[in-house]
Length: 385
Ligand SMILES: *Cc1c(COP(=O)(O)O)cnc(C)c1O
Image 1 (tube, rainbow, N blue to C red):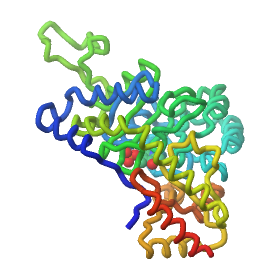
Image 2: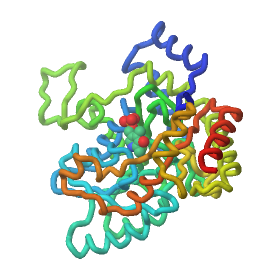
Image 3: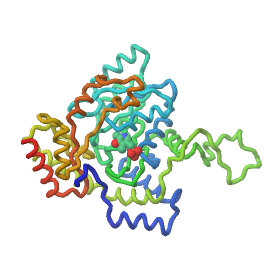
Image 4: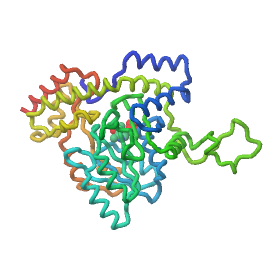
């Protein structure tokens, strides 16, 4: 079976993990800070907190921005549920902004309209969670301009987008956002098995991210509330300041991450090579393809097509029968039973629903070779003939 996505582990990755097992702390050692530093160097962000998943990272981001009961968060319906769940973890409510059918990212026009209405009704969101779907960056500048007058915070859910570029800066630089969240799940740009990171450029916000990801506990003299300490305290002393979580990444995972990040340029090169060949060779088929203009900017986490002349389910099943495990991204978040029980319903976000009806995720990952890709292309051609 050729899967839609897959990790790529080499001998260096294995040695890096084994080295930690044999010679270092398994957690809370030197590998996590080293990985955080490497992520800052690569993304140009000033601060990084490694966490144990992208989902934890989104939760930490919401807590650091003080999102809570009575607040509203908006995200894209065309995403993984975690993009919306993070607001609900904090007691806030969630709403969605429909997608642009071409980029499949949050529509700037729809956002503009929804902001105007929300302002009139006194229902403005406190934050947006922007998803760079498939690795194609959202129009960050336009969105941040719309949000500025209302003081709305911006979280980038960049789970797909490590390795992508926007305005000549790496995604993660937080040029137009408050916080960027990465995921290192095995199908993402690099992997730590499970893992994630929270990036930002603001020292105070970074401090809060660390606090919420580590039990709300600090040993920093600067942060401690000295009115609660007395002369009996010694060097062992620490304080819990807020209700935090144990969202730490382990040093085993960080070592894998450091090793993987060294290869990201090669990973992106290979993903772009595959994307370029799909764009060339699928061009005359009855499929809507991603934009060639995004070839260099996107990190090509997913290669999405829309089936125009056949039933998507038929194409999906035929490909699976031929050993090609295509997938579908995403079931719009608002259509899951949990979200329908919150009051969302079919028809609420028609562009995301229409995209979902025809979407098909073709295999793209580091290690998918030209011969395998040609097999996928030729099989698709014969199905659509
Ligand atoms: C993978 C993913 C997440 C969650 O990341 P995990 O590391 O799996 O918790 C969040 N948002 C999007 C868009 C994702 O694809």
